[in-house]
Length: 324
Image (tube, rainbow, N blue to C red; front, top):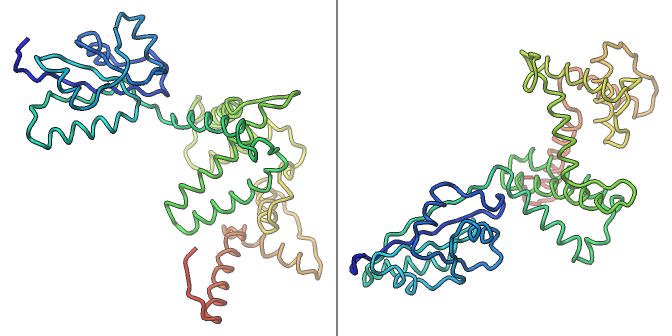
């Protein structure tokens, strides 16, 4: 070794969301070639696998100056950190380098493993589990008690979409996702028919694959209409429904309900006369059906008109107009 060689620091990051031991080949090469390997996380999942591979790991991570000193004489020190790195250490190394008074070792950031798409969902499941166990409010909630929040969050998501607010959209999608994870966590505790978030995802995966044979199978679909027609045929077989109205939730908003029923009837090729009456409900039904036939979502159209009406009210009362 050259006594004047400042050496080399390798910051090796390993995501805790990837199965322990699944490190990249460059990562294993760096670990085996290092003069010293340090790790400040006693519960780092990789440690048992490193020991099994014959890599000696010294517990604890020195500060920036100590780490620079440990590399003197051309030594290589690997510091194993989590996927988010070691910010205090990197900040300290940056300050030393910026001072101009220290001859710095070569510094390499080496990803040992990468998060796969959707990896943060694993964190969400773990966090939900802890909250369910430790939070006095969350631990007492039931499916029935949460039902209203699912409706509220869905409406807030729709509002974010209609406003075109990207930040709100991301947040509201998270709130809807929370409802799914929350209900799945509660379902695990059922004594008779428990299921988990993995069961929920598994059921959805099977449904998506089965209903997209043009993607996962041998069938072809040239247009969105072809896809929609197959989707409807598959659902009819799966659900073994006796009526085109089966599965239409009657609890949804009235205009959306009317449009959905009209769509089902039209798709089935049924020419069904509208019920007649002088009540406002029948007139609204006729308007909703006509809107659906014209390709207009009557629920969205009424919301847009409601917003315009709200703005008119605010103008009349002198309230500043706002978006959303």
